[in-house]
Amino acid sequence: MTKNQIAIIGGGPAGLMAAETLSRLGHRIAIYDSMPTVARKFLLAGKSGLNITHSEDYGVFATRFGAASVRLRAALDDFQPDDVRAWAQGLGTETFIGSSGRVFPKVMKASPLLRAWLARLDAADVSIMTRHRWCGFEDGSLVFETPKGRELMRHDVVLLALGGASYARLGSDAAWISWLRDKGIDIATFQPANCGFDVTWSATFSERFAGEPLKAVTATSQAGTFPGEFVISKTGIEGSLVYAHAAALRDRLAKTGEVSLIVDLAPGRNEERLARDLARQDPKASFSNRLRKGASIEGVKAGLLRELADPAVLSHPENLASLIKALPIPLLRPRPIAEAISSAGGIRWDELDERYMLKKLPGMFVAGEMIDWEAPTGGYLLTACFATGHAAAKGMDSWLKAS
Ligand SMILES: Cc1cc2nc3c(=O)[nH]c(=O)nc-3n(C[C@H](O)[C@H](O)[C@H](O)COP(=O)(O)OP(=O)(O)OC[C@H]3O[C@@H](n4cnc5c(N)ncnc54)[C@H](O)[C@@H]3O)c2cc1C
Image (cartoon, rainbow, N blue to C red; front, side, top):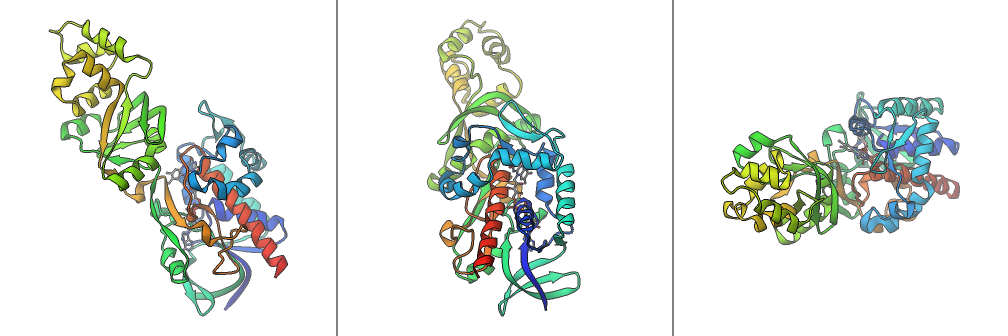
């Protein structure tokens, strides 16, 4: 049986940040991860530029986590967006603020930052044991599947930073749920967050327009009205504007069984003016020409109107104008969690004390996306993973000192 004082299970952003904080506090740490390399989701996030945090007013930033904002506040206060930027800079990664206020590394990828981070951890004597999959409890020990076979390990203090349930192929497969539920831990069922939705497209529409972006539109749901863009997929819609509404749409669908995303295809124009401009078009001209000349709408936007509207409506300028301003896209269901950027659900806050320790399992702490919070895209997810990793590490330090 091996003995390690501190184990961190899960080498994603939350686990690695906890390791960094603990090593600064003078501890020796072993990180265990089931995959052949750590932080695979972090690296994938780098493929779309690695939106590492957000530059908006911190008072607003701290409210982006819905019902969990209050519980996350202390951790966020202690590791704020400016701290994230300073931390990245300390690892040689300069960041910049994009036009939307989102913060990215200038190199728009994660690999140089991760390389420097792992080198820093290595220099601090943090050992990283990959291909070590935690698979539950046995007689007060943790059971691991390792390249050498099954091993039992005991630790004085353990951090679980196992991630949520999206993109399971990158390591966060949420298999731990049953092991913790067996210990009486209450876990909210994982659901897709920041996800696309299925829509019943006709074969003609999806063949012609799948992959096409709808730019400069606004979309409305119970979450509010936001500008942005989204993409037509083979099975429905996806992209940043859809993700911004995803939690509200998902919850509404679960509650009522139906929901539509309402899209304004011409946000800069008012409805009356649009109706007048459309009415002025030659009635003998084709629908496409009338729409292009009267409303500057063509391509995928025109295709979407044709796909969703009753043909009788399209021939009537006033009705057409009102549809252009508020086109409902009826949604069938969220895309599967395996495709979602993140997940909602996880270990309920009531199970944790203020140090991020599980009340029912003294000495076992948790951090990152495995806790019950969700946030839109915009760098909020990574910031909260760093912040909870940092907070749990401090909690572990104070627990060790007190015991
Ligand atoms: C495509 C994509 C793009 C994204 N882009 C962004 C972005 O730009 N900005 C942003 O803020 N967020 C982004 N995210 C979300 C962000 O990457 C996650 O929220 C974050 O990685 C979660 O960190 P974590 O440490 O909690 O878990 P993870 O990163 O999921 O890490 C968990 C680790 O635990 C390991 N593990 C799991 N189970 C076991 C086990 N039983 N035994 C041992 N090890 C185990 C896994 O192998 C993994 O390494 C993106 C996500 C995706 C999928």
